[in-house]
Image: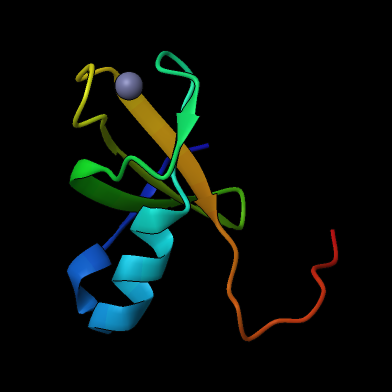
Length: 74
Ligand SMILES: [Zn+2]
């Protein structure tokens, strides 16, 4: 299924900060490093953020779960 591009920077600043602070780099094995050059996209009804780790410059991706939704179905 094709990715649907979304505009990460259309989000409000506190939301962007929260999302970036919840990143995880599998190569560094460290959380909360942030994401450089973040690109947001939707795939199969889920929203992801992909970018580069500021430490190792490896690719990092995380799922964005809308905070306003208490539970997620599907
Ligand atoms: Zn890293």
